[in-house]
Length: 167
Image (cartoon, rainbow, N blue to C red; front, side, top):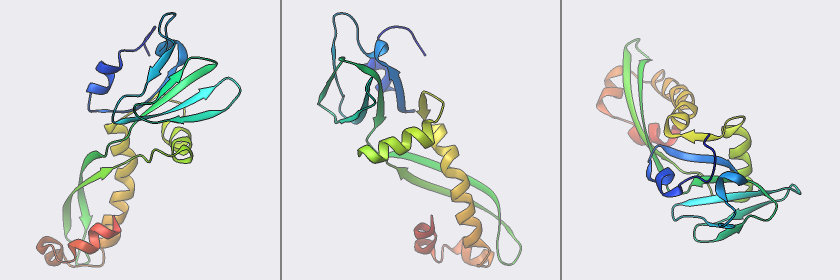
């Protein structure tokens, strides 16, 4: 983490950045005592008394008793996954490419859960972090799907909608 106020224009211009928790001293300075959440982001402001408040894009949060600010990209994040060695019902090893969009819901309970489960003890999440979290679940779904179908059907693309629904 850096010292002093962060340059949000620089931070949010990096497409790999998904979320960050910033201590109040990195958001505010002596002269700048409020912060406007940029378009495409949502924030959860944590106060010294334990209260947390949702701050939507375009709204401002003031520095009064703020301990930290969780900023989360609110636009869908495209992910591409490549899975190798997925066994088909007839024993062939298949390769799968999955493209999906991940969105982080901008509601208070969802942001609390995201902070606790995804951020945990770290201060930021990148696209690679999300990919890692999604990949094992995706692989499990692909294995369950493929083990019930012969390789020819998998290569043909039959049941593509069923695979999409499962993932």
